[in-house]
Length: 123
Image (tube, rainbow, N blue to C red; front, side):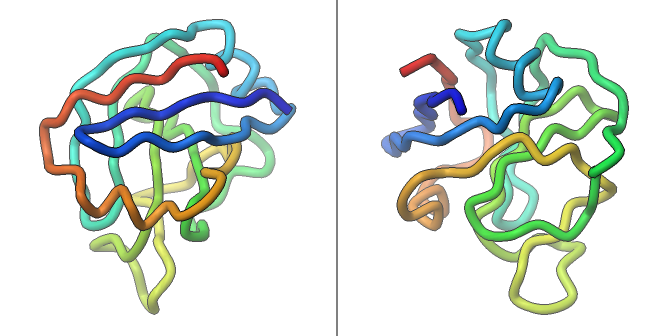
């Protein structure tokens, strides 16, 4: 597992990427800086990685999970309810490739506003 640092607004957290081909492609593309978008309690942003939908892709995710959304070439950070949520857990707009998870309290990302700069770096 590879560790990354996510910095957005005034929030910084470390995360672990899993061993999937999508996570490996993201690791190879680091560092990445982009302007984040909020969708409920999810931050997503376009990254310079192109991957197909993985066999283990799913829309139901957990707080702290990281995903890659193939239709938008987007990195997603889930930290609470989204407009697609049915209960209290996050739900992606459509299936995402699971790529890792935030270490520690992912709900800190609730402090990050729409349009904030997000930077992903290797640890």
